[in-house]
Image 1 (cartoon, chains in turn orange, yellow, brown, red):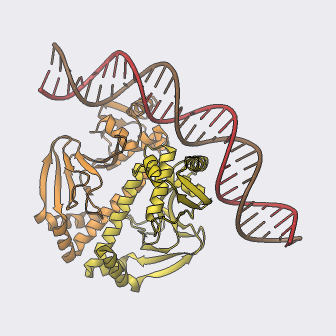
Image 2: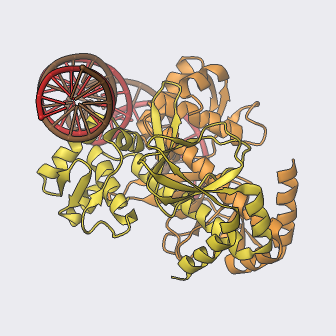
Image 3: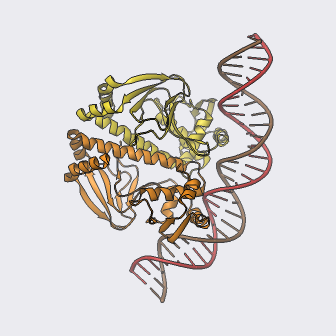
Length: 215
Length: 215
DNA sequence: CGTAGTCTTGAGTATCCTCAACGAGGGTGG
DNA sequence: CCACCCTCGTTGAGGATACTCAAGACTACG
């Protein structure tokens, strides 16, 4: 793909200013109200971007997979907290000012950053369709389809859900109990099979899409 | 503000390729599956970005106010439909390729576009906190606060809601009836006053924030 | 092997959605 | 100028879905 190769070039161009860090399970990559001085990129593993409400509940705004950029903001401080979900998640950190300078010289870099931001918009607006006005099965169904599509092999050999049920619940804005119940129901319907708690196989992809809808 | 003036400069730099169009009430600015060849900017009025689900329901993903850029996508086609909400909404259209070329030469333009995209991400992720796991009053309350903050005068003299209750319902992912009932309840609580159907005054801002929360 | 965290299942309840009817406002045509 | 219609907005009654509280099973880790 043209986009892929351009992204590759741009990553190379930014390589000089990047620092890679492996993270422990649950470790904060940045926190709400930290100064927003860098952009980030997931090399491997999984991270969650989340907010804590006034009532103490947590909402996960995005799961960040390998290849995702994040940390963009127009403000001086971050609004969300990002934490590694799995042990050993590797994150690249790009000092914002220095990347901006590189981008001013090399339009490809600017373009790749723009596109990363566009992608974040698309993903987040697509998620709105899931959060808004969907039943529990629709939410869980489309979540599984989303994770399958975002995983490297499109989930043909089984989808890995490295996150806990709690994470899924906070991502889909529903209670853990309902997530659990719903997975049981989907299994009962023959749409999915659960190898173990974190490995799902999509048996009847059509049915799952029909239940969850792509929207 | 520095950002404002830079945005101004960038708008000037792009002025040559822009075309302004006034739109009728309900008129489509672009439609799902239209080729994504331009970016857009709201000069005046109000537009809604929406999707139609398989079951025929509509979801409004974003309200677009004066000063908002939109139409960014990484795909070749648009995924959402954008329609003018009020008669006479003026939209600027920027051919994407030509702006890209300008941005390659003038880093300020690239930066402003980036920031517009960042802002869209922020807005849309903030909205997720509203859509997810909130009661009806919290949704409506935070919607009113949001509209007040986004209006030019911060809504001190009253917030204008040019859109219909149906639009609000589809924006907050709830039924029209519940929107209506909830506004009545908030009025009963003394948090707001309704001058007419489209003019709300926030009487007890603190209470509204407490109910709706900023998240 | 024990403990803490995770996951699943059950029972009861609250919230919001659906269906339904009515009222108000704006525009059109007679 | 008035009657009519159509859309929009509000209110009511009933029911379904998902949440809360609660308890028990399973896993991973020390």
